[in-house]
Length: 333
Image (tube, rainbow, N blue to C red):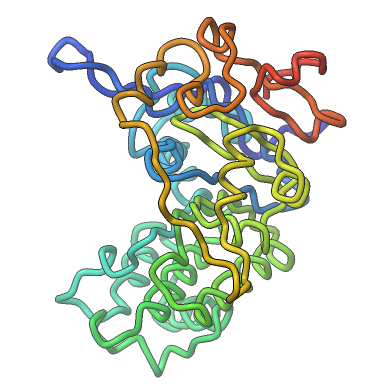
């Protein structure tokens, strides 16, 4: 049986509370498990509201921060134990596209500089012509031409152009996985559709998988194969994207999807939501269900221990809620 492309096992990240850090701990991610197979390529969505742990997970996978406990395993190797050459290969094969493309560019250099750096650092080309061909091919994949953009400065490009160039830069390295952290949140609707279409084509034609980090369930519904919905660092519900969004089972996910406005001009969207304070929500971060203060189905046992993932209609749909304790508990991973 072929080994997975990426395995995340019981990943936990805790900020604060250390030897040199006073103040309370913040559990940013807790006991997170995920498995991505190498083939077929897929788009796996990590969704949730601000503060749910999405970007923490992205930074852990990219190696920008270290786990407090747990493992991240890429093609059978724990990334924490990789040597220098293995880390270089990992950085080439696991690429990133960020929310704000402008922040990635040096405003003093023409945009061709971002491609030149990649070619130099990873030794992708033997001569200038080969390098130019690589850049042009990558730009063509995202619907751009070098003569139109490469000699410009970042501020001369639109947000959509800058973002597509970051996708092209990632593609040029022929990665196996792209971690896309809110890649369409800062572009308008037409460019959003274009970038999502590029992600689908890279999945289907180039066998590149994505971890798609987003708070936007509508785009997740459009392109995601599988979805993990986080609440304060823990998985509330996971499964096939269509199944989870059309038939949510966790009370939080039901509330989240129910808050999406219906496109009916005669129906007013009630935005007057009253939520508990952040301190109240974090009061149960160390034990029990974190959604307890907001849950309409709260039970005493919810405060005793974080609920496991229960299988709903098979292992492909899992929910962390004691409402389903008559269902089998899912295996980790």
